Every structure is written in C-alpha cells, then in structure tokens.
Length: 255
Image (cartoon, rainbow, N blue to C red):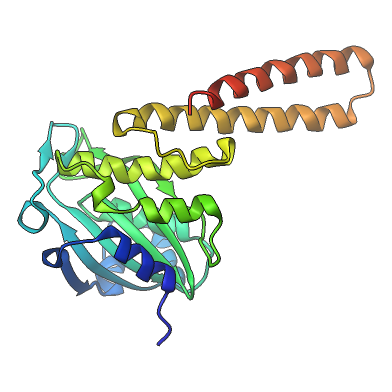
C-alpha cells in the first residue's frame, strides 16, 4: 500500500495525543442514505468519495482543552477526518457536503494518491433550527504535492497543536482557520505570515475576500483596456485601475 507521505508528515507535525485516536470508518452508505441530501449531493458521494475515516477526536477527555458555547457557536468536539477521493474533481463540493453533515467543527484531510488537501469551515448554530449548523465560510487549501513550495512547507509545519491556543476548542479551531489565512495571504505577500494572531482571523479573512474581489475587478479593467479604442475611455479605465492598485497595496500592508 502506498502511504501518502504528506499526510504522514502532517499527522506527525500535529503531535496529537494517543487518546485522540479514534480510527472509525464511516460507510459511504451512512452519508448517502441521508434523506435530506439532494440527488446532486448523492452523486458527489458516489462519484468523488472513495472512503472516509473518523481518524481523531479532540475533546476535553482526549486533549484536556475545554469546550466552548455562546449561543452562536458550539465547540464540544473537533473531528479530524481522513478522506480519500477518486479524483481531483469536485472535492470542494464534497468537503462542503461533509462539513454540512458532520455536527462538529471538522478538519478534513483529503487524499488522492500522493496529493493532499486540507479543509476547515467556520460553522455557527442555525438560528432557525438549533440542531443544525450553518457554514459561514469554508477554507480549502490547494492540492499539495512533493516537493512543496516554501510557503506550503511553512503551512504544513505550522499545523501543530503547539502552535494552537489551548484556551478552548473554539480558540484551537480558530487557529486552524488562521493557518489557512496565512497560506492565502502568502499569495499576496510572498511569505507565510506567522505574525498573524488568532484574534485577527476574522479581519484577515475579510481583507483576503476584499483583495480577491479587487484583483478580479482589476483584471476586468485590464481586459477592457485591451479592446478599448477611444482615448478618453482608456484614460478613465487607467484612472480606475490605478485607484484599485492603490487599494490593493494598502490592504496587502495590513496582512
């Protein structure tokens, strides 16, 4: 059997106590038999999912970190799942489906041959149905392959419990999310931003969303400039582009 070396490295970096090991296989049928799933969801499970294991469970009894509840969020346990997929297609949709149907904050470790991807989601209690959780935002790493780029290696190295808060399971999971923000920030800064704090997580997420939006807008203006023939319109487009570049520069400085 070919073991995924990146997964092995990540698990080693996490330094999970032995008590957290669960190792429970979740049959695909358990997911696909859910009557609330759409036919499209069931097709994703059938076509994309190969196997799923509930590998580790982080809760007060296994990791000695307290739970967190405030009426909006409920962090009684963190599930770490190892997910094998048949191909690289539609994996984000599969991750969203899994995040939606697992009643705990979850770290997904997705394997395809020697490739590895990670996924987490900021989930809150559904105000219309307190038994359900709503995904506020999903965070997905790109597919990682050996040899890793420098920032990707920093991302894998950073995934250690020693680099996470022990105040509560919510703070620990927020640190997981922050590592995804650091990796995304590196697309704009060129470096893995280890200086970012857990308390900055929501602010950094908002900055990254704005940066992506501005980059898309800037690309749109550049495409218009390529086809615009009237000088007056070109001048206007260039002014708009410069203004957006200035905003992008200011936002990058906040990362």
